[in-house]
Length: 58
Image (cartoon, rainbow, N blue to C red; front, side, top):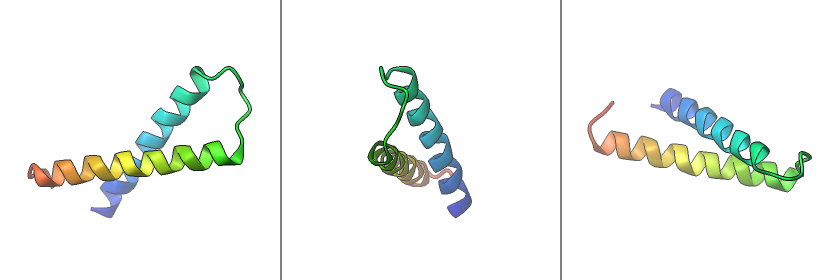
């Protein structure tokens, strides 16, 4: 279960980072923005794992 959570975390982080990088006017990121991106990716991946587990996908 933790392996799947880690995979979803990495996937969500990459998607969010790519989205913010592509649609941001400034290319330089501050430390705070990266922490916010990591937090969002963790919340998204945790939610996906919880939903999939609830639906019976193990």
